[in-house]
Length: 317
Image 1: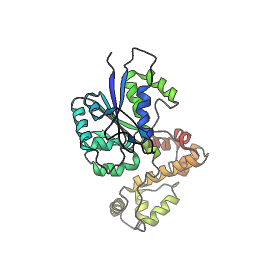
Image 2 (image 1 turned 135 degrees about the horizontal axis):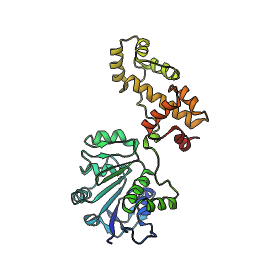
Image 3 (image 1 turned 45 degrees about the vertical axis):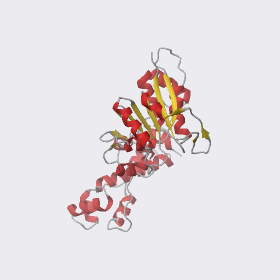
Image 4 (image 1 turned 120 degrees about the vertical axis):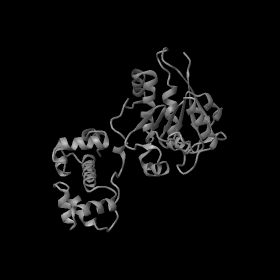
């Protein structure tokens, strides 16, 4: 059985951690000889030795030419989202896509594929912190920032750093089966498959409001009374506006609807309570205005891709 040639792209100021992810996962010796083996190579797209972000140097004998016959190409992030990658790299990636190679981008590596035009019209993700920047720069990409990784045909993109592990384990599972992927995950002491997506890691999911706008006092009052029921008519009346005008002006000011803003605030409070205390789920549902644990779980799962209990396990102080 021929080995799959996997090429990992290296460049100056690369993160050693991100570079190590595919190297660890696809160079691990396997116990079953009948499984597809890998020919893993790290190639430099610039003059070597490669200078890492932490200061030490990496030596590799492989160059950009390795991409020309690679079965899988992995780009472990990119050093600067405002820097267009070298044209030679972009051209090589376009040729690789045209001949059917599988392309994988970890974290900000999505910027490289997007710069090459490979992600146009395709689903992709990157680190949540760069979501707005990425979406503005590459509006033609069908961005999804609520997931750990996205697969679209022969394209795989992952979210922030550790999500690269999830992405590469997913790829290993496809290439060698669940048993091999689970075995390696146990050796690495990581979960074979994490629940949820990167939405649960975002520090502030609610769009910041304009200070001292017409709705400031209303929003402050609503935040102080999230445990109460607030209908659209009640909010419009408190703002001394008609329902229609209130809805229009609120969206113009905050960028979202009153009901969505209220839901975001309730979810944010629920997260804070889950992280910082030991309140029962029933009490958290009541304090955050969801009323019942079922309603809290449904909204939490829909937004963050995980349950309140699992979130507490991961993030409780």
